[in-house]
Amino acid sequence: MRILALGGSGGMGRFAVETSMSFDNVSEIIVADINAEEAMKFADSMNEKVSGIGLDVTDIDALKEQMDKADVVLNTVGPFFKYGPPILEAALDSNCHYLDINDDWEPTIEMLQFHEKAESNLKTAILGIGASPGLTNMLGAAAIEELDEVETLYTGWTMDGAAPEEESSQSGINAAMVHAVQQMTGTVQIHEGGKSKMVRPLKKIEVNFPGFKKFKPRIFGHPEAITFPHHFKSIKNSINLAHGSGFGVLKWIMRLVDWKIFSVERAAGVVQNLSSSIRKDLEDQSKESGLDLKNNNSLEPPSIYALAIGSKEGKKVSCGATFNTNELISMGEATGIPLACGLKLLVDGKIQKKGVFAPEGAINPNEFFKELHNISDLLDVSDGEIISIFRSWM
Image (cartoon, rainbow, N blue to C red):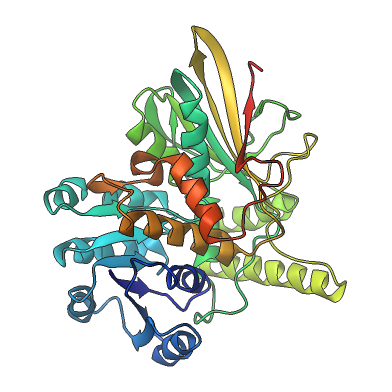
């Protein structure tokens, strides 16, 4: 299949391209970026399947011209509240399958409305197949499989180590940082008591994760809170959570945005500079920087997790799932490689559903994690398990 990788030379997309170019069922990858020189430079560093072009995704005619030549669109162009819906619509108009790393809950609601169009076109669109959303969704699906019925679903992750990629075609304020500020200010949507509800972010929620000490992460606006009740109708409560050592500072920065002293962009710049400074300090001390997704120390919150609460054999139970990595990994790796895994499952015919879905709505979690292990060295399987499951009843 021919792949159009929008933003494919960016901090996230480059890891998806580098992983995908070795797939047997991928014949060509066109890396498209607004910075043509960077797209071609990056493509030249890949194998013969990869080429680079300049493309402005806001030029719909030019976008569709490239999509008409492709079978699958990989979209890593953010922010998704701006670019997600029109790019998905254009992909479906061009009769393409579609996968992205959409991490905004607002456009997720809008993009799910394209389900019937995709279904009638016999096309599959997967929204948010990165780290969070993505890995968190697959962990949630794995935890849900352990229960007879699920009522509450939490997804969560650590903010420690999260910083923009140093190597990227993007300049200026990183879209991921703008996104983070937006999801920690104003109000965000969660699912509570069987209904959608708008709440202030950063409120603490107590989590009782089997095998771990109780901890109190904070509400963080994200698609998982929207998509799990969309795909699993028994879910009454669905919230995405984040934890980390820097929330004291972050909370004050977000208050300045809510008080209209800082703009979203200015706050994003401050957060980006803080993240980069922390990374530089670690490098100066000869310490590794990155996301530690292998922390399963029972005295600390899991680094990335999902917790399903519901019933099994008539009893109230809970089941948690965590993801084990070999070493510290970057945001780009944690996001781009799961996107490539989703593409691998699609081109190999292992995603059969047609329509628009979050990962948990169309992908078997066991197949996903097995494939992720096959195509990358992200997973630590030294204990024989690809992911770790923690059950309250055992």
